[in-house]
Structures are given as structure tokens and as C-alpha cells.
Amino acid sequence: MKMSLFNLNDKVYAVTGASGALAGAAARYLAQSGARVAFISRKQSKLDAAVKGLGPEVATFPCDVTDRKALKTTLALILERFGRIDGLINGAGGNMPGATISPDETVFDLDFNDYEKVLQLNLSGTLLPSLVFGEYFAECKQGVIVNFSSASSQQALTRVLGYSNAKAAVDNLTRWMATDFAQKFGDGIRVNAVCPGFFVGDQNRSLLLNTDGSTTDRGRQIINNTPMGRFGDAQEICGAIHYLLTDASRFVTGQVLHIDGGFGIYSGV
Ligand SMILES: NC(=O)c1ccc[n+]([C@@H]2O[C@H](COP(=O)([O-])OP(=O)(O)OC[C@H]3O[C@@H](n4cnc5c(N)ncnc54)[C@H](O)[C@@H]3O)[C@@H](O)[C@H]2O)c1
Image (cartoon, rainbow, N blue to C red; front, top):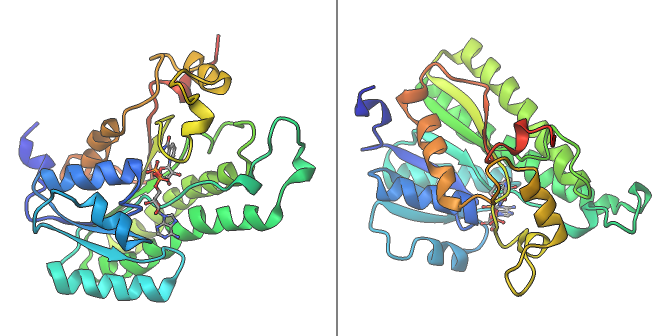
């Protein structure tokens, strides 16, 4: 396989949630591998930290992914700065305490407001950027979208109700948009998703690790159900994203690629 299939030079990628653990690692990797990268997230201070040490090939764009008008402005600013956009990574996402069910609660304790907020961030926050940037891709007949799914999207993972529902919908959205774009705008537009297993980040650190760095009971349960027997390292998301963004995956669309050490394929026996 020729390396040109993986070419990132002269490419421009927009990454939402780029100040976070996984999307941030991917955005930095792309910038360090020859691409120009638009780092998008809510807070400028976090964006400044995320691009520290990177050169003029990156730029930051504070924007809420659930705000369609702000996304349109961001798209215009990125085009003004870089002249083109080749792909969008929908990395913004996450959970909220009220949308989870703790061990001493039942589903009837769900905080419906938080549940709706989690749906909005993870589902609308993937759909809206895809619509705004996708319209530009449709005009160009060229463009790649990579969404972020979760191990909880297809299996019932206890506690995380809202987040699981939203990520299941992201999987469906990935297949739906892949089909629609290909049928209506040609084979130059592809939509896929990565499905990370368990990576320690700010959001889930306390669920997976105790303050002394040892693994929590839940963390141990997860590791016992991961054939590779460990959590992921944020850098391990980069190869899959590189593949999905470039010509190496030119005939691949609508797929959800698991990066999970085998968690998703293991029966537990
Ligand atoms: N870390 C994991 O183990 C894991 C596992 C499975 C799936 N995921 C998913 O992968 C994606 C990236 O995860 P992460 O670990 O980097 O998360 P993270 O919490 O470290 O980062 C999330 C980022 O999204 C940004 N964000 C939140 N709300 C936003 C909004 N309304 N508008 C714009 N930006 C917003 C935050 O500022 C942050 O930069 C998320 O969708 C997450 O749900 C993570």
C-alpha cells in the first residue's frame, strides 16, 4: 500500500472538542503530521493550552457545537484562514451526572433535564456541525466526517443512560448520513465513526481510578472485560482517525471502527 494513500499534506481538518483528551490528541497528531488543523471547542483558554507548542498550521475557534449560527460563523472563519476544509472530526461530547444512574438509584431517579442536555451535546452536537460543514462538502463534492461513538452505544453499560442513548443515535446518524451523502452528492463524501473503549480522561478518571492511581472496582470490571487487559492511551486513537480521514479508506463509509482492546467483541467468558 503506497504511503500517498495516507497523505495529510495540504489537508485542512476541523476538529470539535479539540481541547479534550481524545479529540485533542487526534488534532495535535494531525497538525504534527503535515495537516493544517482548526481546533474548535467552547473555551478559548482551553484551546490556547491545546495548541501550545504547535506552529502556524493550527488555529483556534471557540464555538459551541450545539449553536448552529456560531457553527456557520466558524466555518466561514476557517475558510478565511485556511482556504479549504477537507474533513470534520466531531469530537465534542461527554456525560453529565444527572443523566447517569448511580448504584443506589433506579432509572426512575433520572434527571430528565440533564438527560436532554446530554442528548443535545452528543447527538445535536454531532448532527449540527455535520449539517453546517456537510453543506460545504456537498458543494465541493468532497469531504470526510469522523464521529465519536462509545462502547456504550451498542451494549447496555450500567449507569450511563443518557450518554448511551445519544451515542447509539450517533452510530445510526453515521450510517444514515453516509448513505444520504453518497447517494445524493457522490462518493467523495464519507461519514464514519471511531468507537473508543475506555481511555482515562478528565471526565471518567474518578470512575476508573482511585486518587492513589489504583483501579476502581468499575475500572477493574472493565479491564477484566477487555481482552487486552488495559485502558487505552489517547495516542492510540490517532491511527484510526488518520485512516478514516485519508484516501486509505476511500471506499469505506458508514462504519463504526472500534478502538477498544477488544472490549466490544468479548463475551466475558
Ligand atoms: N475518553 C473516553 O474514554 C471516551 C470513550 C468513548 C467515547 N468518548 C467520546 O470521545 C469524544 C472525545 O472524548 P474526550 O475524552 O476527548 O472528552 P473530553 O471531555 O476530554 O473532551 C470533550 C471536549 O468537548 C468540548 N465540549 C464540550 N461541550 C462542548 C460544546 N457544547 N461545544 C464545543 N465543545 C464542547 C470540551 O470543551 C472538551 O474539549 C467524546 O465524544 C466522548 O464522548 C470518550
